[in-house]
Amino acid sequence: MEIRWVPALVAISLVGMVAAPASQAAGTTIEQMPAKLETQFALSAVPPKLRDRATVYLLDPKKGYHLSRQIGAVPDLSVHSSLLYPFIDKQGNAEQSYVIQLIGEAEKAKILADEKALLDELCAYRVILCLADKKH
Image (cartoon, rainbow, N blue to C red; front, side, top):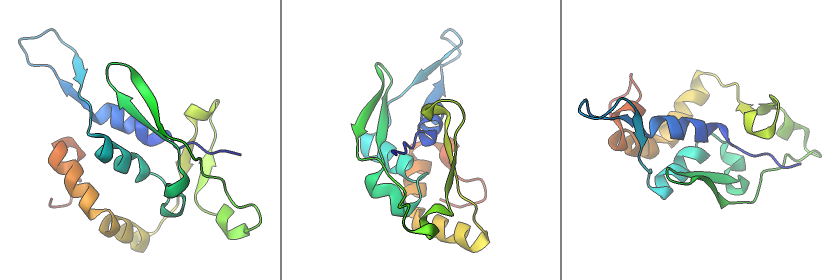
C-alpha cells in the first residue's frame, strides 16, 4: 500500500498565487516557488518519521504538478503503534485523501520549534505564509 502526501500541494498552489495589479484584468498569476523550499513545505505536512519515504510532487505553474521524487511511505503493519497516529482520511480518489494527526499543545510547540527555520523562510518568501501569532 502506497500513501501519497498531496494535501500540502493544494496549500502550496494556493499560497503561490498573487493578485494582479489593478491595471491588469482581474485574475491571479502563480509564481514558481523555489524547488527546495516547496519540497520542504510539502514534507512539513508529513509526520517526520515518514518524510524520507514520502512521494513529492512540485508545481510548475506553466505545466502543472510533476513528480519530484517517488519512494512512497508505507505503514509497518507489524508494529501496532505505527498505525495509531497519524491516520489517513480517504475521500474518493487518492488525490482527495488527507492526513490527520491529533496533537496536544506540547507536540504543537515541538513542531513549531523543529520547523522554525522553514517557517522563517516561508514567511520571508510570502507574508501570507507567516503565522499570525509568531514573530519572524
